Image (tube, rainbow, N blue to C red; front, top):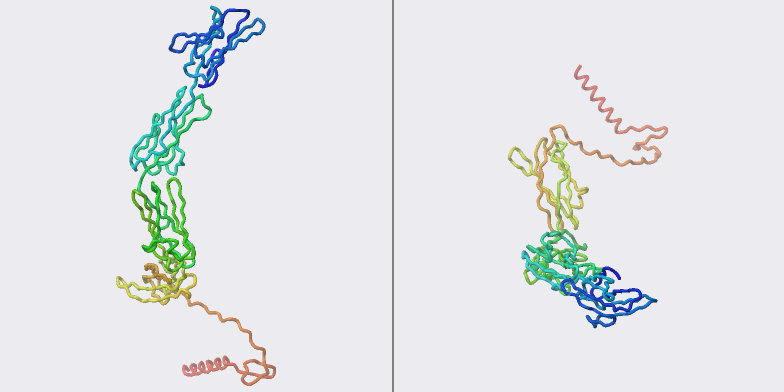
Length: 446
């Protein structure tokens, strides 16, 4: 008979006691940890737990044994068992009963306000005594540090939005193969907060675009879109507008997609998200005018009479023209020397040559770009021309090559020579005239 038997509550305990060549009765005795001895059975006569105990007699030659079986064992059967044959002690055994770990049901959800502190107990049972373990099931988007496990409790202090989610309490002991689990949802209640992914969007007719608002709120928000203070709906719009929605445990993204932007789509948009605790408004501006105008030229010019102004600009619609004002600085006096309009179609490589400038002089450029939807802000830029003498030579114009015609039959007016003929070119006349002038000058000197 085994010296020690460990059973899980509800299992059957089996103890066997055997001797050789005896006719004395078998006596089974039981002693609990804190109790007095009790007689369980004498031979086949069950004295204790009659609805659970069964005695089986076995004989093999001169060997005689008795098997004690206790079905659906429980804590009351935990203790020491003694088998006596007559007055002789033959066997001593102990039975230990384990009780599987259990977790008392948790509330399906627990609500608390933003900044509030609350604890959720997790009560576990079992033998050996299990210890509860808290674990967050919802993925941690951002760590808040406000949630901790203290004894058997989940504690949320100064609750923030990212403390919400599903949590589980588990317990395990040797009586179970896998932990037993109960879950609860922590709901942190707060008014909506909105983040706009792009507050200013530059676009133009024919382009596709999406505008998005990201809401953080619980309860979850309901969102409406407005364009120039008029609600945008699929029913009220004759444009191709698509509403998008992507929700997760914390942040919900709402998207308004406009396919093939039209002129009437330009303007101010609002996304308004509401729950029973408040609302949040995100503002998006849709522009088609030019932007990001930047002067690329260096402030110090390399020529005294010419300055090359170079710039960059972004615009979805084509640039129609540029406005250019140039002021000359003399001491503290500004004099407007240029007021020009540069047509966009005439500008190549985003540069313009300012000519007829004075040497070693400071000039102030006021510049802006325009399209059919508006213009950039005026951009101010100063540059200094080089010292006198560093002039830029005029561009050399090389005439295109020509192919002379084939010689014709000589005529008095022909500039081509043929055999047996002689012509006088205009160059010959000029040389002859210069020679005559030189001779006259020499004679006057003499």
